[in-house]
Image 1 (cartoon, helix red, strand yellow):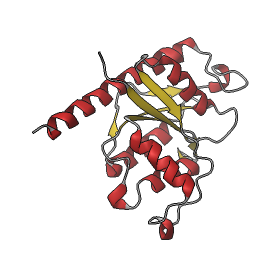
Image 2 (cartoon, rainbow, N blue to C red; image 1 turned 120 degrees about the vertical axis):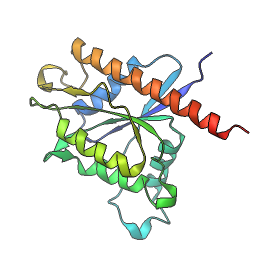
Image 3 (spheres, rainbow, N blue to C red; image 1 turned 90 degrees about the vertical axis):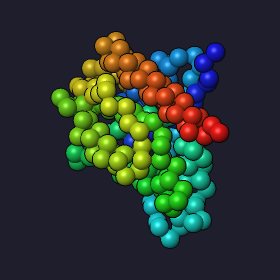
Length: 193
């Protein structure tokens, strides 16, 4: 039997009908049955303040615990000004501090994005990948999923309706599960006597 896994979704948008959060909801329905999925709420995380990193605010502690206990991460990246949203960057920064407790280190992660334009949030995805290098996150590099012209592919509440986009999203989450299992097996081998 295959070991169960837990994947944590993190959306860079706080909008109620966010299509990026809609991608996470859709991803949760496409995972194998032995994989559980939840979407983290980052809306209550305060702006990063290094003075507080040794006495973390409660919403930060809760978020870090969710990341720490997740086997893998699925980021949905809203693009603002050619980059990731401030709320996502803020949550990522908090969870990496203090440096001795960077809960991202070694985590397998994948990225999805959607936007109204032809690039589908690709610039934000590539900026986030740069942060992965320093954070020690193990990225899924292919397939890349950019949902373009999202007004035609989501309903009014932000749920994904496009079958082609669902097909690409499913391929991405299956690869995230594969990488997560690989990382887990490697860690077990390294820990074996």
